[in-house]
Length: 110
Image (cartoon, rainbow, N blue to C red; front, side):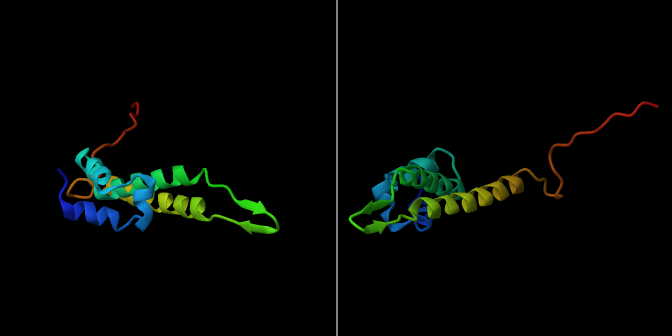
């Protein structure tokens, strides 16, 4: 079971309404227990919010209109947290010496 500090750290990066999108403390704990890092759990949370917010439509009726910025703002967060997860992955694939673990070489005929 993920510890409460890790769950709280993830939930602090999600909106207060995260429960409305199904991102309860139990769900976040399950993501962490499933092997996701905190960064990737946050990314998964924002992806869920963006997916559910994509169905929100702008309303135009009787001369008034309401435009929802939530889908765009959620997608911005997804992009940000994806870049953070990519940096985390890159850091994990490097040796202590700062070199990549994998390399490719071209053979030359002599």
